[in-house]
Length: 318
Image (cartoon, rainbow, N blue to C red; front, top):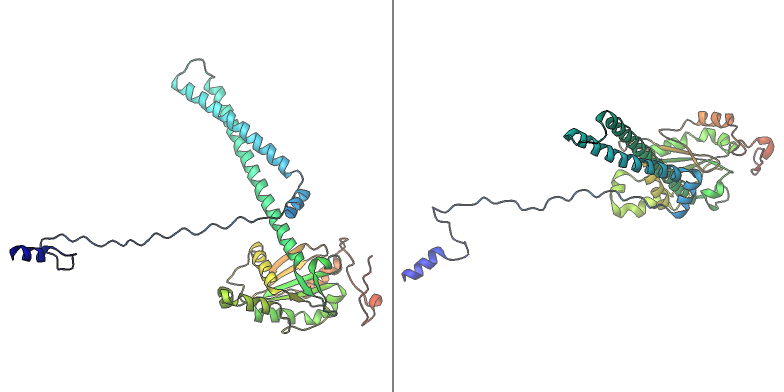
C-alpha cells in the first residue's frame, strides 16, 4: 500500500501539482525566426537585348577588360609593396627602403581604387542601358487599336508615323487628363500625336491577386474616354500593366502621389521614350515644342492643305 501511494504521489506524466520544493523553469517562446526578405531577382535579358547593348556601346567590354587587368596588376603590385613595408618595419636587412616603398604602395592602391571605381561604373551603365533597351522592346510589343480603322497593331509598326503620349493613371485623374486634351484634338492629329490612355487599377484591386484579370480588362476598356483620330485604345491590358510596373520604377513614381496624378510618357518618332513626368500634361506646350522641333525624326506636322479639312491622312515626308 505504501509503495502504491508513493507511486501515486511522484509518478505520472507531470499532470499533478508540483511539489512545494520543486524549481519551476520559465517557459521559452520557441517561435522560428523570421526569414530575411528575399532579394530581388536579377533581370534576365534576351540575347537580342544584349546584342543591341553591344551595338550601342561597342567598346564597353574592352574598357572593362582594361580596367580589370589594371586593377589586378595594381593589386599584385600593392601586395608586393605591402610585404616590403612590413619587412622594412620589422628590421629585415636588404629590403627596399621605406622612403621608396611607401610611394609605390600608395600609387598601387590609388590605381586599384580608381580602376575598381571605373569598372563598377561600366557595369552599372551597362545594366542601365540593357534595362532601357528591355523596356523599349516591351513597349514596342504592346498593341493598340488604331483610331478610325479599329485595326490592332503593335507600337513598333507606328514608328516614323506617330508620336505617342501615354497617360497612365487611375480613373479620376486619367479622365481629367484625357478631357483636357479634347480642345487640342485637331492640333494633336495634325502633329501626328496619338494619345493612349491606360487605366490603372485602384490600390485595393492592385493588392488583390484575384482582381488581376479584372484590372487587365479595365485597362483595355476605352469606353470611358472620348473617341477620335487622336486617341487609341490599349489592347491586352495585362501586358500594358506589366510594362507600367517596370516603367514606374524607371520614372521613380511616388506611390503616395500616384493615386491623384498621371504618369505621362512621351514616345518619339523613333520609338524611344523622350520624357517622363507626373501630373497633367501641358498640351499647349507640347504642341508648341513639336512645332519647334527640326530633328529629322519624320514629318513634324500634317497640314490641312495636305489632307483637306476632313480627308484621310497623307503621310508626306519632307
